[in-house]
Length: 443
Length: 143
Image 1 (cartoon, each protein chain N blue to C red):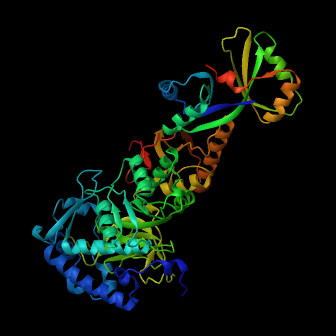
Image 2: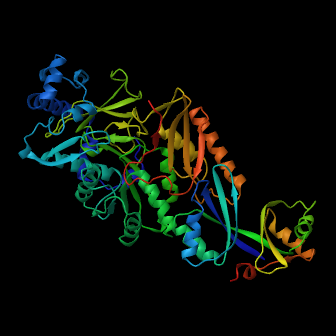
Image 3: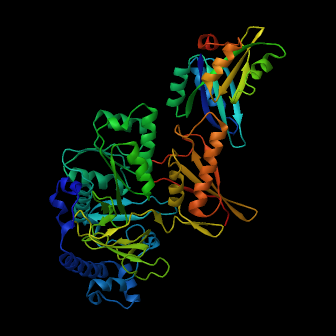
């Protein structure tokens, strides 16, 4: 097994030790934790007990790791239906923190943490940041939103835990972000990738050259983003852009992270057990096949979750990672099963549109897909902002750009869609997760 | 010999033109002349202003995409045949006019033509050889 120079240069943090467990030991630990968790959830959470009983299962039926496939799934609506505290396995006296997801439709989802849960979470965030090459001495600008959203506090505790200096600036106020980045000597930025693209763009307008700043690492998560987006970011700055993964239902950020190899995300599977299933049938898929990621919390006390359907589409990557971690890797997530929309019978993911747009020289990944229906026929328009790189004083040049974008989309999607060039900043910038699709079709 | 023209991207929607003009107005920058090239969806606003560097900085800071292009300003007599005489110089020259627009600036007998040529240096030589006055920046931006 070869180890890259970069992997060696990344200083080893003691919290990362479980990343390198021999696989039999890891599996032994997983099974032990799984059995204890199922036993406890069965006893303490009525919803879980009833679900297991309906499937004719008792905690004693979990004898090996493979038995996890016999446990019931948990889906998002289960969390909503048990709002606010129905899935808690610990009394409120032991709960030290509550978070909630943004409830875009109806009630939000509430999640709870005991002190032990917060410690595990912080620990997995330390492991995440260590895998992204951060250490004591880094100055981390945390532009994730602080509050009910798990991103802000998750990154905050992790960055403090690794011994870095944290700037808890939270999201928004872009001009101040850039001033702070420059004046405080930020070496690592953490935020959503779409917000960072906006920061790059705004810095340019303010006359700040990001390549002259000490910024060297970007830790980006909370939304799917493409490999082309990474290239876009890395070609305009000197930083290495890492993808991290997590979700509030399981813990928040810190479920999985890229390492120096930037090829797949290691899942911290000693705490979060991953499976890949067929999203239609729910059947477990063989290693390497693409499907929906399902996660089970192995050590969570306040709110244990069995087999959570994440809606995120990925696959396990085969083979060992050159970084030496034994944790399984999943391919980075560029799409969610609920992101997909169907246009004239063709399945489309926003990330495909992103890849097509970024294939055309000089375009920015600020785009919006607008779906409408005209006389029963679905129409798709992609709005793309004009950038200084592509703008010309000649109409012909802009019409040429439009034609190249239409062609690039046709190549990827197999359908001709309309491209509309729009003014810079006319597509709303998100300080958190970017909104890519506006569906105006009437049901 | 060349003068600086600013170009701005505009969506073809009501109210889009006023915003950049207002920014320049607040900054006390005078628009000497302008032209708008448009398609159904978008347009390009081309501006000759009194202080192009400051105007470009103000528009960029406001988040606009601004392109600075060198164009030629040619002074012609403001009477029938004034433009035709200039254009005739380029017949069979292999020089292409990418776009042009015209304005007068207070002198009754003169008009100014703004040209974007594909080969601006060759165009200058041709114009000067024909005794046509290629106006320098000071005169066009002035006042």
